[in-house]
Image (tube, rainbow, N blue to C red; front, side, top):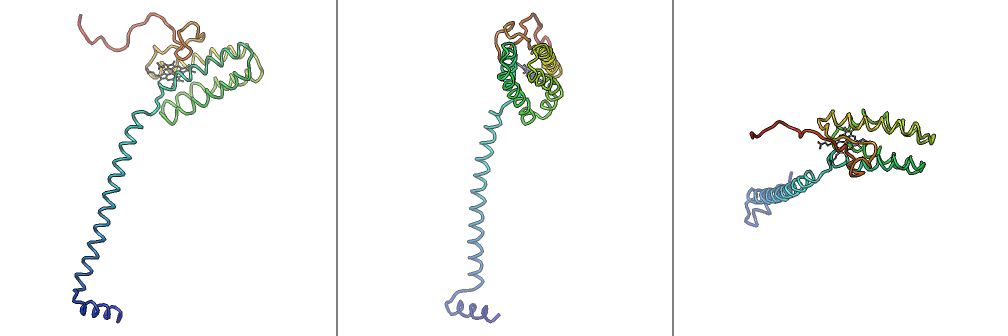
Length: 189
Ligand code: HEC
């Protein structure tokens, strides 16, 4: 207590008003705080702009599909060449790609698991036993699952074909067949 008194007396002898000294110390704190708040605001702005760019660039389920398609067909032709080591590798990568879907779109990720995990198990067993008949049957079942999910998500025109050579590309192995364009007829003739 007497220390405060001494401080008070010293300040008085120095001709300073102690309450003024306290007030200016206080306002220095406020200034330091407000400049910290200001730089935090700038940081938050910078981060939200960065997040906005990343959100615009983020992978989508659609973007994963050509990779999925390519892995599927390389696995398919590797099996037919009895290159079981490669078929097994492609299946593992295919599983990883499907596994990533849950982080991009949890709902579609769960759908993809529901449609494909059983097929992947069948493929794994066929590859393990180097059994071409079981492998072929599992490939067909997988294509049916791919297309069932495409129907379920409202994109029935995304019709994957088993033989990529029937389509244009491994990455987009689609049935190139006559179909109606999607959506209502908006314009009048
Ligand atoms: C979640 C269910 C789901 C499953 C399972 C699925 N897909 Fe897809 N696929 C999608 C969606 C969603 C799209 C995008 C549809 C759109 O853009 O209209 C798509 C589109 C595609 C496309 C076209 C991509 C493009 O850029 O035009 C290909 C190729 C494709 N899928 C291949 C496959 C193959 C091969 C399999 C099976 C191994 C498969 N998909 C399984 C949901 C699925």
